[in-house]
Image 1 (cartoon, rainbow, N blue to C red):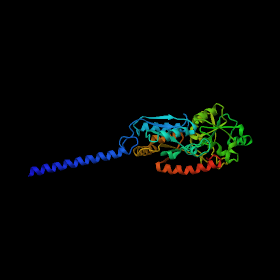
Image 2: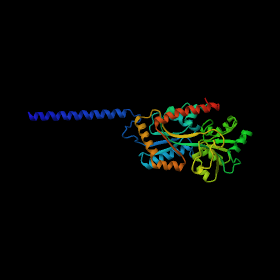
Image 3: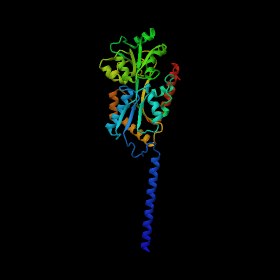
Image 4: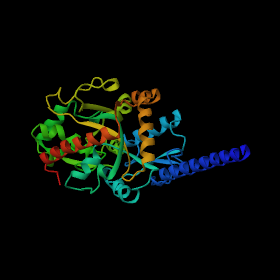
Length: 346
């Protein structure tokens, strides 16, 4: 009897273990089935990752994408290989058309962007049917400001000199930027012009694919003035190649730009913030989204990232996915109002 009872208990124990194992497999299976990429929470990412800069080399998006991948690699926060891919065209609109239709579930392709993702979607000319709502906003990491820049030997010593010349003869000045007409650089360029009572539509604006190309046009004498990211002009300023007439920050910036006045200091009641963030595909898997939310938060807190911010002249401003999405909704309203005031809203 004792032997029979012992065997019965052993059999019951084995059945309990078997049922537990089945339940564990079902749970793991349910987790895997929720992933568009076929990865579970424990093993994403399993292959190389691409971060796209939707512009040419040398501009704010390119610098941001390369800084992110560099620090993620150096800190070991991401074990997989990460590469930056440049996809210029239409101030980011060309890439968005491809991404929002062909990479809807691609957990292994992210991209960086800034206000143009909203502007391109709202503006009338060159309108993009795709915007941030066709993505998964993952995190905002930095903020930057616009800069009005001329060559070091330009006849325009101050922003007032530039505005007076434009007021007298708008077509005599070629303004350039690294984004399409009506996009971010254009808005930065015409903001002080508009606020000075000059019709923005009368000013000649030439667009290039990225801040690097716009800077090359300025230095090559193909543009009189450019609007670009304040953080991207430091090296040119230190090398004595350019003069920065003003920045669109609420107060003076530090470092090499410490002596550059703000628009408000010059009597122009205007400012423009250039945030930068990371986005994933609209139908990103739960596992991938959770991984990137956690990883980008750790990145924002890491000393190596803070060192990179200082090196690049960027200001830190972290928002997680939910906060970032809410902020984008507010930005959409503000940018929409600005475009309407310029007659550029769709």
